[in-house]
Image 1: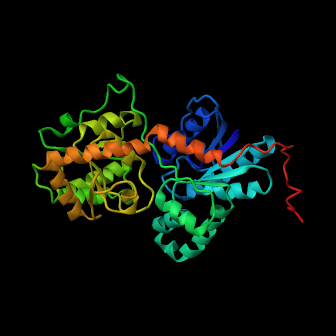
Image 2: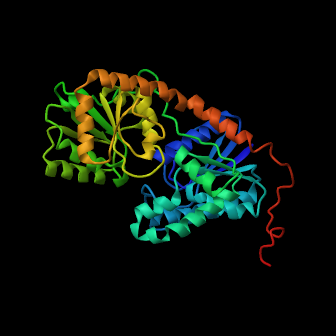
Image 3: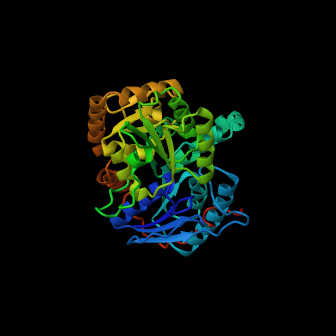
Length: 400
């Protein structure tokens, strides 16, 4: 089938949603579909058989697009919509696969063109807006009603986790829903990651190594993890943080100085995605201190696959995938995190037991499992409807 994939993100860049988009388009192409991927202006091209990447024009004054909703992102959204209209005028697509806020213009375009609409739900937009801009919280009921529209009108919903699927099932009874969890990135072939940083050389000594990998946005809870290290005995463990923009790393460095924990906390900065499996293998404890959101962080699947002990906050984001059998689950506060780190650092047998259990569970979230779920979801759409594929402006009643 011919698919127009609308991804309102810079692509390809090594951060959560663009990685998930790459995972999806590669899987669709391997299944034999032809995919036109329409993205923002920024990012690097990738070569995949069956994939053509198109970029919307860059809005004036916009250079980079930060994580989450922002004014630059909304400006890029407008240019993406304009480009999508052009694509639908020129070509006939069987499916439009829309991620995040791109589903709203896709719904309008569906009234003008014949295609099946797939809504790829990485998050709940109403919650995301209210969390990023707390003053918008008063509009949350209105935002939730707006969000209900694509939930009910799309032909297929692909929630990234069970919590989002439950919201859709409540708001859109009878809708076709297929949960599509992320998968960990593939492990590089031998010799591809010779320059991976040596965590033991970085921290020195023989203390267990706790590792956090990811961005340093507030919802990730890294500030609490740093505060927790105040309460961890000096010889208990070292903490390495990999990831974050230069600005965020500088801010974290300031917090490390204020908390007087520079002797046991090491800010390593960003590292290539291909280095992730080897970095995780060097750690004794893998940390996910996230404090908000319901979608499961993609890195959690890589953590599980690595077979190392995981310390994660006991919020729905984590507990819909992990239980006490596979992880040390703690309350989202610094004292609880400190207690979890001490417990894991002082008990090697517990670390081994949790890591092995997590690795077994990770098989449910492998790349083959992901591709199988996606194929089964697309099969519900049925064969493409053949027709003239004309632009249905007049038939839609527009302009009357």
